[in-house]
Image 1 (cartoon, rainbow, N blue to C red):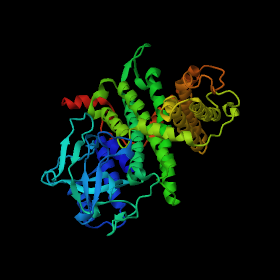
Image 2: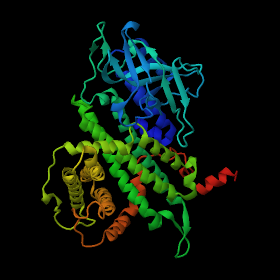
Image 3: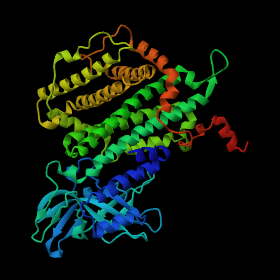
Image 4: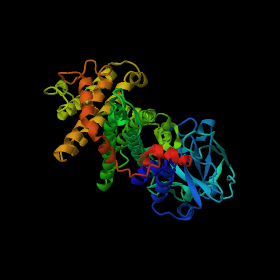
Length: 531
């Protein structure tokens, strides 16, 4: 994760490439029980720089609905147990995978292609197959048609359309973590378990979503680091006379403080998901379980949503400087956009997780919504209680509406999709805020208060965002004064610590390569003119 985070901060293009080559491609090959033959050869080519890989999953007609992929790999008894890989329909054309010829001469391209395994007319589900796509001289292999997609502003990737016309593959090209093979009698040996089969076949996507979540959180932290350095150096005319730095202007600083609070919570949310994934592996549990799949999906939705808000805010706060690539923000926004789409559209997979949450048991009692005592800026525990009550109320309301709606499953889902997504999103936010508050309790008194103020500011902003829409008859924090007044006071308390809070992101001076890495961007501009 650290590699993906650091690479993304320094060069978003590199971060995007690494998540494909290191996690998806290399990770899949290393998962094979006993790599030999073609697998061993291409693994060696990848590690020694003679070839790059592509994760060939999504199709023109199928993005996140992976259970419905149409590309086929048919077992051919008469062909020495080989497979025939084919694109049967136009909707089965592979769309977006980076299958185009690499821009570096002398480097080949191979792919891990996902297709339905058909044996004697029986569909055994989606499996990955290894195949060479483009030779080192740039020529596409026979039976394969590849067309590079139009230019995609932002991140340069070799995205393409790919069609297969009865391409023959040897049996060793069938991949799986379980060592799946077909014996001499045509029987499937050690198949991928049927429960959650597609997700077991694309196991690296789950890890990839964690990587992308970490990258999105890293982008938020880096963007704020740039914004704070900009605010410290940029000054404006004060209404009271003289000059004043932007960090001393509440209208500018307040938005950054809100973004800092959200970024801290999001960073913790990503860490919790990574810890849960690692714990399942360490305890020899099923890291492919639906529960963990949904947690990772919701974390990706949460982190990429935060990154969208933060990078948009920072771009605007930087003014003209924010439009230039050398100041990183537009590249960070492009990375965020790619992250939201890659390895499962964040909104769609969030909705899928929200839908599956409808079948889990509910623990509800009206007393959950009763938080004791008034909420104020010095009562973080009561704000945490409100966050928990909000999540519980949204879930209860979702299940009530779903149960009372008549019609088929689609009709019923259409009536609650927004509530369901808000409920699982609120639960994720609550758990992250809880974890941050727990960490804060272990800090020295001064630092503890600052961290608790961040948690309170996050909760207060969540209340302002949802209080008038989703929670009209739900739990409301008991307050003796307006949310606006409390928010302004929290901003004032946190303002002296803004630079310290951002320094804690541990992005060393010079690593971002912007005009704000020096003591003053004015000197950088003068230097550019030879002054």
